[in-house]
Length: 259
Image 1 (cartoon, rainbow, N blue to C red):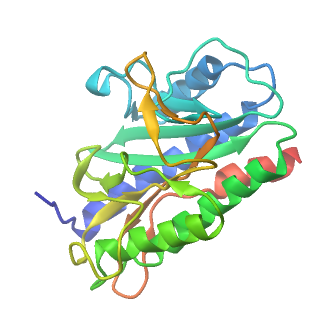
Image 2: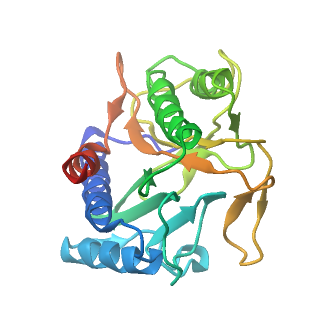
């Protein structure tokens, strides 16, 4: 069942989504070679609690941490651990919060130190895929318009789109209907209506599209062990233009100051 949100509920979703962006910016400040993903998880959790919210992922279906941190060939759902991050790694950091009864959910893939040009291109194209998909989150469009835009741009650049994992509706529940595939055909799928809030999150692989689950029961990895990137925004479907509720502004201010 799809839950359409009122304007007041969308503003609460915006507040939660913006807190996710600020949390990821705190994580961005600390990212460097030698730090562990568990260190980053602790920073995020404390920041979320200090802002009168709860980590949205912790204990969700038994997930043990506040962030999903996926390194290199890990696509999503990576469990933070004590292994040090290295120069040349990429890490996808996915964060969720629950505040005032509504969830925010956003992800950003970071490059650590000097990263190979083809991997930097993967990050750039994946973010472009997200923004191209968001352009179609308008009243009267079809869900397939979003997926088609993402898939076309990824494949045009020589990358592949994960099929087994998709975006989702967002609201009082972390995962609501409908599913938001990152592939599809224009003009197919449900018609988008005002009040629909979606978490759009392309997961794009450098190599083949196939993925598998790690033995830890959570982490999804590429079958060919090539790197994968993941960017995610929360979006309210608008009459003429999508309303992006989350932001990368705080993250990219930190990254620009570090460079």
